[in-house]
Image (cartoon, rainbow, N blue to C red; front, side, top):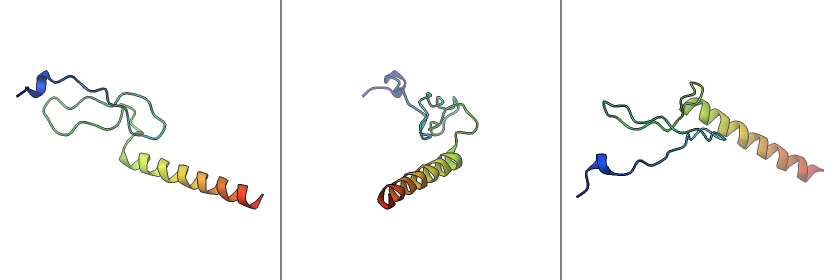
Length: 68
């Protein structure tokens, strides 16, 4: 059985919509690894708000195309 510390590190990317920055490494004292990069504004709340905004924009553009 392989030790967790010997497993190759997977390159994780920030899950904020449109962000390609690497996610923060896990805290040295343990806990779950971060899903976001080091930008303070990239967090669960702002990511959700951005996804909602993008969905709304997409729905509005589809509506305009249908009406046009």
